[in-house]
Image 1 (spheres, one colour):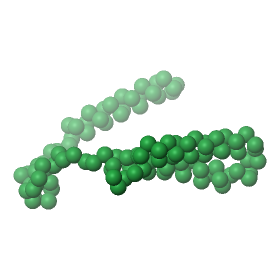
Image 2 (cartoon, rainbow, N blue to C red; image 1 turned 30 degrees about the vertical axis):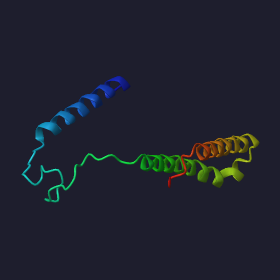
Image 3 (cartoon, rainbow, N blue to C red; image 1 turned 135 degrees about the vertical axis):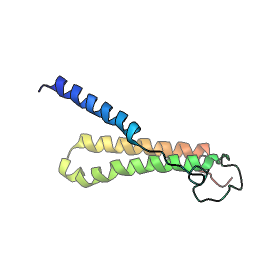
Image 4 (cartoon, one colour; image 1 turned 90 degrees about the vertical axis):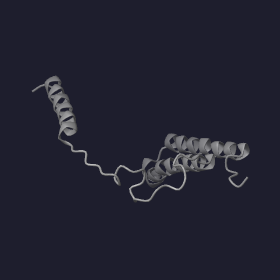
Length: 115
């Protein structure tokens, strides 16, 4: 079987399984299961309240610095094996961009979460 025939068979199989999953699934719901919260308690306030923007900022900063660590740790473990000035300079350029971004966030007040 060639690549095109295999791709067509796979696409047909995935589509068929996707359609069958809607047909075969059962939707059982009672009053408690279909309520806003599955605890059975009536909500006290509206569930659609505004979330303060600082939670989004902290989450975004966490994501950026988490991705930074994902890049830094593997590189730090193989830097002596690579033994390349180009790789080292690219790594320093990456750290420079991160430092400049951090300084920019600091001067814009994005890290001032208590005001």
